[in-house]
Image (cartoon, rainbow, N blue to C red; front, side):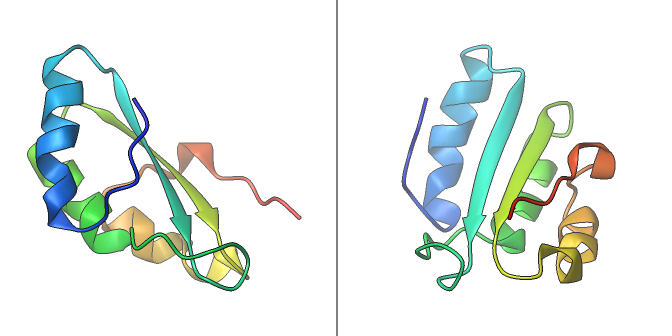
Length: 87
């Protein structure tokens, strides 16, 4: 399931995916510089982590200098086991 909804309004869609059997959720975070901004950031990742504690959270940071934002997303509940930098 792919959705382009931002903010807490996306939580019902995420719940439907998890309730429907999704094992993990992927968030593609854009900063508006590296790629166009979509409006999903660490607060949404944190809300998803709180709502779905047993679901894998996967985050792609499509932003300039992502290494400067990794700690923010780890604090939000993203596990650091899947970090890579794309040039």
